[in-house]
Length: 251
Image (cartoon, rainbow, N blue to C red; front, side):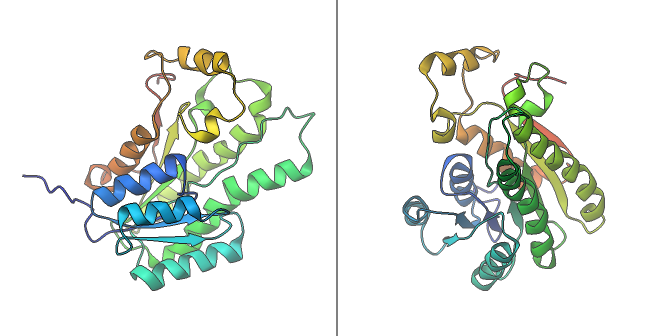
C-alpha cells in the first residue's frame, strides 16, 4: 500500500511561495509530508498564514529578493540552518512585464531577467552543495513558449522563460550525472490573483475558450504536477518540460 506521506523527511525550498502556484505547491508538498520553506518578497502576512496552516514545525517563511544573489545566498543558508538540507528546489518566483519591443525599457528588461533568469540560475548554484543524489530541481516556465499565436507584448516574458527551458535541458545533463533530476513545469493560463489582476471578464472568458476544457487551470492542478516530479514519480524524468495546460498546446 502506497504511503500517504511519500515526501516525509524531504525538505522543499520554494521561491515566490506566499501566493498563487507557489502557495498551492507549498500546501501540496506539505500534505505529502515534506517540510517547506516559503520564500516571499514583500508582505509577510500571506506567508505567515501559510506557515500557520501547515504548522510551524513543518514550514518556515523567509523574506528574500529571489532575483538578488546575496539574498539568494542568505535564503539558502537560512533554509539549511533550519532543516539541514534541501531535497526539492523550486525557483517559482517570477514577474510578467507585458510590453512590445518598442515599449520595453532597460529597467523592464533588467527586472524581468533578474527575477526570471538570474534568480533561478544562482539559486541552483547556491543550493547545489546541499542537494544530494535523489534531489529534484523543478523550474517554472510557461506554455506560452509553445503557442504560435503569441502576441507581441509577451516578448520579454516568454524570452525569459525560453532561457529557463534551455537551462532545464542543460542542467539535466550536468546535475543528472550527480543523481539530481532537473525538470520544468510550464503552466497554461491559471486562475491566480496575479492572472486576474487588471483583466476584464470578457478577456478572462476569451482566454478560457482557447482551452479544450473551456476553463482556466487551477493553482492546485499545477501544484500536483510539480509534486509528481518532486517525488518517486519523477525519478526517471529528467530534462523535460511538462506543459500543464489542459491541452491548450499539444506535442
